[in-house]
Figure 1: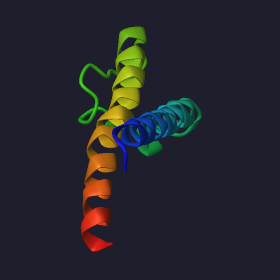
Figure 2: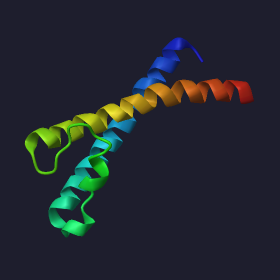
Figure 3: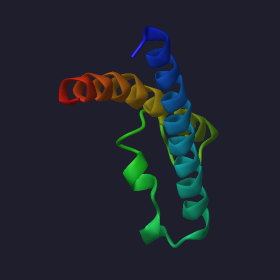
Length: 90
């Protein structure tokens, strides 16, 4: 795979994963606002997202930014790994 194709794959997967994680984060926050406290998802997000605090503006923004950046992190690692192993197997 050419370098430009790898870069395009990373960009495509970066945006895809980042938006998926951001939408999932927003859905969990919305769920936490309507669900009973024992069903809140913020306990799952807090250890994974530095700076996240439940029901604060700065915590919400930190969680959203962290979720988005995790998508790019995954794309930067997964696309080259996938290309490497697919070349070796095929």
